[in-house]
Image 1 (tube, each protein chain N blue to C red):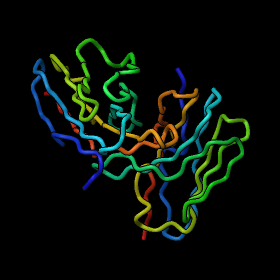
Image 2 (cartoon, rainbow over the protein chains, first blue to last red):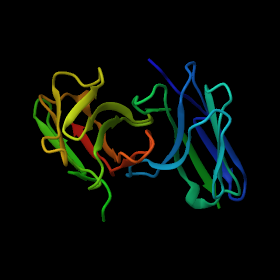
Image 3 (cartoon, rainbow over the protein chains, first blue to last red):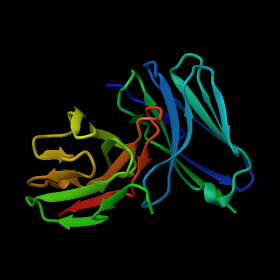
Length: 111
Length: 115
């Protein structure tokens, strides 16, 4: 079935640094989304992307829908301690289809 | 709080017992989803309802699993004859007809431990 490969699996950074993570697939996706999950909580939507090449920002977060429709990246600028958590990419490969999640990137931020 | 509500938050059971989880979606949301998440992995789709109709079921949803949404509001997920491999976080999510597909609101999850 369709799979999303996320990298890196984990990151340890210093507060104030910028972060970049990405997600790739062997299949074309119509929609890409990025979610964040804190311990003991459900995922929370950060950014949604609906068109190839689309670049969208939400505060310090920027995400892009790859032009090939097989990848997406998420950047976090000037990281702060509350950015700690697991970031998941998710995608939908056909209209009305289910949301498929990547394996997650665990972010740790040192103050 | 008007978010997605799940109950119970934690359940410990012995192998072979039945368990049931409940999800109350955001009130005006007509779509309801169940996902399963194991440690170190992303959520995996189990099933999806639009109103009371169950529109899609994953192959992960074996015969021991059944989900219902009888009145198109809350949903239940029952696991019969639990196995240790069923230990996971069971996440419920909802979305409204006006939202783009994929924009899901998740509950806090029900964590199942099967001994």
